[in-house]
Amino acid sequence: MLKMVDVYSDSPRSYATLSYVDIVMVKATQGTSYVNPYCDTDYQHAKKAGKQRGIYHYAGGGNPESEAKYFYKNVKGYIGEAVPAVDWESYQNASWGNTTWVKRFVTEFHRLSGVWCLIYVQGSAISQVANCSKLCGLWVASYPSTNWKSWNVPNMKVNTYPWSVFTIWQFTGDDMDRNLVNTTLAGWKKLAKTDKSKPAKKSKSEWVKKNGTFTLGQSLEIHKSPHIESDSIAKLKKGDTIKFDATLQGPKRLWLRQPRANGTYGYIVARDKYNKPLGKIK
Image (cartoon, rainbow, N blue to C red):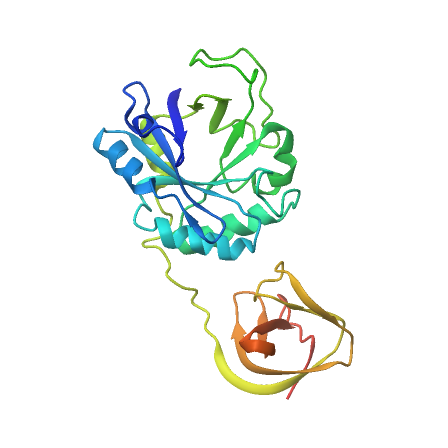
């Protein structure tokens, strides 16, 4: 297996060029307001030293699509040569325990970049990200002790279910985050490649300006973003009417945009994924 070290702003800068390490995974962003000031420094030093690279986002637990966009915006220059990952853990994570957050994040990042993220999670919390097992590789944290300050591989069982194997196993996290990578250098490079001819900069679907009213044919929610799993702003009942100023025909649903206070918007589904109308548009 390959050796990998993951680094962040407080790591010694020398970790990016350790002679016995094959891969350097660099923290890039957190939430929607933090960029690691040493990200590119460590990344470029690792690249110059002939190391394979990865870049990761630490989940802040805000809107997952917004965090995916923020991550992509700050790492798009590395796409195609560095393997992306999302770090899902409890510290400073407002959505810890949410079982849909990571799937929404990786789906949005894939839409933007054409690459599926690896998912970092502790072995005891894999159930929170299990719905990603057919999409993403697993980067599991499982330690033999809190004081295993060695590259000697511990003899222990590592939980990966429902993944059959791990892509990365982080087995120390005290003085250094030591990791074993279950692939070859060629395999790592393949994980970094996009599955599109070029990254998508925006969705093919576009908003169309159109004013009208929508009378609900059933109970529906108004969402913070045009995504069926995004947070709810309000719950409306059958017969309620809203005004809208734009429509979006997405790949599965027709969305209406509702102007709200202070220049904000709400979003409601007018036709479902089976093209069934959920109310009357006038």
